[in-house]
Every structure is written in structure tokens, then in C-alpha cells.
Image 1 (tube, rainbow, N blue to C red):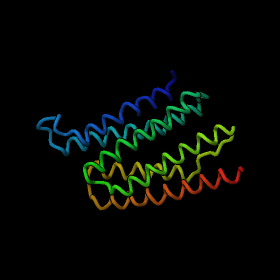
Image 2: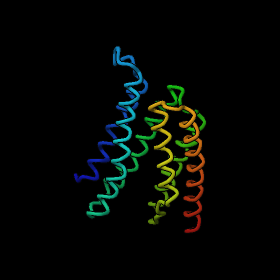
Image 3: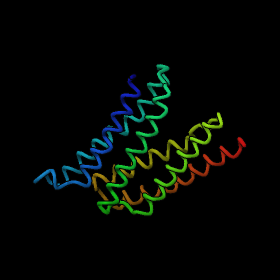
Image 4: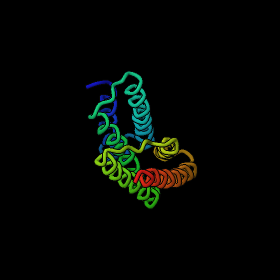
Length: 177
């Protein structure tokens, strides 16, 4: 177990805690919902930062592993799933936007499995990284519930970037055929 894999595991552990804070507010007693939002937002930011650092550390110190190649995307998907699903349940995120984002994520994950089975690779593009940033920004804005319209705008920007990067990924795969 190396540091990048430990960071991915921390992200996996954070996902259900974020979901718990968003949807099971009654178990926290008299704690005001705003504080639960802030704590969920802080935990989400911490987890999102680990996504940046685990990849950077793995590349910089040559610590990329097969386990990491599985854990990292799994952690990313679980983190986004916990936030988007929790936000949908709270009524803060448009269900169609969340469906489009998560549907694309699952489709591309399946496509990556196919690509790997063929012994090929299609690397993530700069747009894919921007897409992730847009999704993270939308989640943070919606979790902390400041200026709801900003969160909504960021969410639909994330939807557009998610679709665009998904199309770009499919085209990259098709060009290899």
C-alpha cells in the first residue's frame, strides 16, 4: 500500500460520510443543517484534493500500481455519486442533470474496460480534467448551498462539459479502430 492508493482509499471512505451528512440529518440531533452542509462541503473538498494529489504523487514518484488504476477511478465515481445523489435527494440538484452526468461516467467506465481488454489506451484529455473540475465546483456550490443559482449554473456547465468530453473520448476510441 503506497500513498496514492491510501489517498484513493480515503476518498472511498469519505464518500459514504458525505452522503450520510447530506441525507441522514436526523441522526445528528439538534445540529443545524447548515453546519452539516459545511462539514459535508469541507469533507468533499478534502476528498477532491486527494484526487489531484494521488495522481500527481503516483506519477512523480513512480508509484502507479494496478490496484491504483482500479481504486482511483472507483474513488472518483463514488465521491461524485455520493454528492450528486445526496444533492438530488435534498432537492438541490436537478435529477436530469445528475442522471446525464452519472450515466456518462458509467458509460465511459465501461468503455475503458473494453479499451483495456483490447490492450489499448485512450488517455484523459484536458477537457476531461476541466469536466472533473466543473463537477467538483458544482458539487461544492450545491453542498454548501450558497447562492443556489450559481450551483445550478455550474451544474449545467458540468453537464455540457461532461457530454462533450464523453463524445471526445468515444471519438478517440473510434479513431483507434
